[in-house]
Length: 355
Ligand code: AMP
Figure 1 (tube, rainbow, N blue to C red):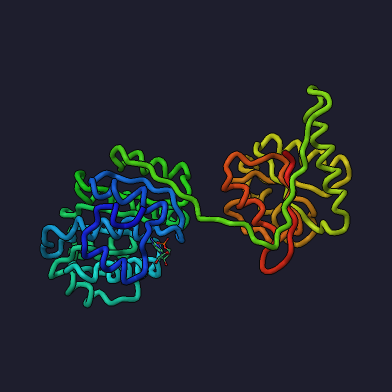
Figure 2 (figure 1 turned 30 degrees about the vertical axis):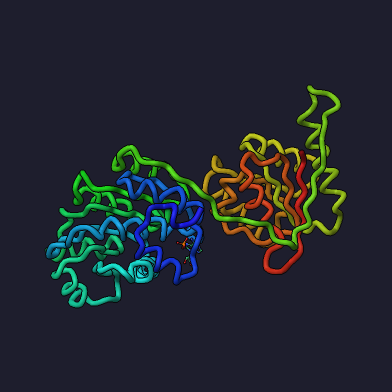
């Protein structure tokens, strides 16, 4: 599929062509047709997937019709940081070079006066960080009654930064009839709640970061069939110990991944019982305990971390010599994330999976 198949305008195709982009990325393929049809969108995607163009491109074509009124932007894009806001603005300049859209950027570090003048004249696109936008709103510089498209980008970072109350307020200041495009790399319960409240029958699109494993990771699998069904679990743990032992001194530290939290606990306990220096980490353990465990693993005090995918994902885990998959992950993507914990920064790594 090329961009031509997405019903985008000639002007956009020209700008894309000049940039050297022929084929839409998976998120663009999925999102653009729905955005053009005025649907609400819930996109689960990270940066690096082409997410920005997935909303900027259709927005340019939609906004091409109609004109902005004084102080009443026709679309609003919220970003958690100045840098991201500036990046989105650049995308509008880049792809919108053959359109006559106007935009303003409301971020810290840019004087109120300058942006005021732009807003006064009326803008098609307003790109802002939530705090700065509300500042302007309170000064009466901007009205949100004419916002037809609202984009919330990087919602999980907004959550981390404490912006969710601001976002809720902004949602309520925009018309009920707006089209909403909402992006988040993860769907925390708080984010789920917001989308349930403010989005109307959204189309869900999802793409993970396009991931490939580092060539420095030696990957292998060990096939496992239990001899006795009633002892399958303990036989599997015995095999895990054999696999770890067979790596000998090469295994300086390791993360063992299990699919279920209960297995994380059982596996960790069993390893400890057999004399390994292991500790569990998963979402049900309290934060203090998790931080402690991680700290000790980082400092080299703890040799083996037994983890669930979710617990390991957001955490800054240092490079390790080995990753053992006690279970085959359910999602193929998770395999890449898991083994990517080893073989970092030019070092060699080993990944072994029990199948
Ligand atoms: P983003 O995920 O929006 O931060 O985009 C990541 C990078 O991919 C940016 O440098 C974009 O310019 C680039 N990009 C976006 N769409 C495409 C495409 N269809 N083909 C190639 N590169 C793209």
